Image (cartoon, rainbow, N blue to C red; front, side, top):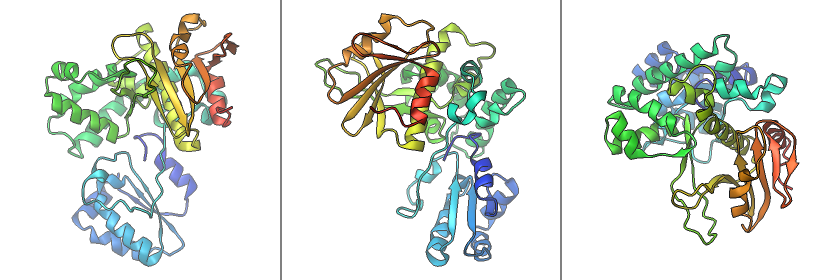
Length: 367
């Protein structure tokens, strides 16, 4: 599973060049199997037992999973199923192949994959989706991506009844990137009900464009915030949804950089199992004290703060010092765009983004 444009189909073609492919993104194939689902079984019977079968965009016809299940059992066929939305796959009665399938996630590029081509400023401006990164006209591709999402993922799959309301909702949801979502504010501005906005947020999460980061219960003798924070999976998508073009504005830079660090941790959690999970921590109320990420691995913790400024200042350490007494805390890290590696007197590490990304890639995060 992965968002549209993350390279799933390209990777599958390269990894399984001899596989039998059923491409449900092809309207012709989709309509044929929609009208006659039984034809899928006839096709599978003709596939040799030693070949892989790829079903691309499986969420478009989730009923085919029953036949996948049957042919795993009867013919021992091996399947790769990919999709960009978990919404229809979560419905009651859908066969999710429990115990017979491994779940894998695909994300936008990480710096390791781009190597020398990686450029932080370009990545913050245009994002790291392969479909955008490889484009000669990145700005136009991002705009087209946002339109394609509305047309093919939302309208074609009939995920919402009020498409104009959903279109008004998207740029508002983008404004809450790296923040706790205020559902009432979005509902008022988009002109839809509060319960509708909650449903729209679920759609963004289930179509893999966004994710919620839960609050960490540190129990540090203060009342703690409990609502989750909201992140988009790619800074380019954030900018496309809120129709922000051109150079990055000062007021959007902090959220874009924090979101990139969040997505990097998330990707390596899925790719390399660098942690069990991660959270954020903040006292309740309007306190400026906050820790962007608490990375959890068993009983061990690493606290990470993302700062988009160019020069280290002691003010950046406030949140990390507030959680210094956390049981199991192994490291406290500030990640900033670029500069020297530093360390404060009380052991807080200050790492440039590329250095932090390299530690994740090299499995060197934990001491």
